[in-house]
Image (cartoon, rainbow, N blue to C red):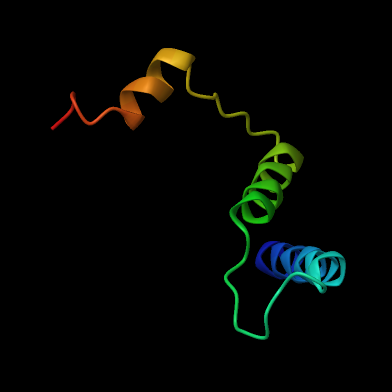
Length: 70
């Protein structure tokens, strides 16, 4: 049931996205937009009582930097 509810949720959100974006999208096959995928994942974790942290500004800068971490 957990997989199915997430599957239906992402399908419904994708249909809504396509409806609102129909005027700007070319006929093609599109990946699920990251923001929708993230939204469904966050909501599922929230309903399961699981909390995850977010990267600090310093961590975000480090991840984007090509000067460190290689």
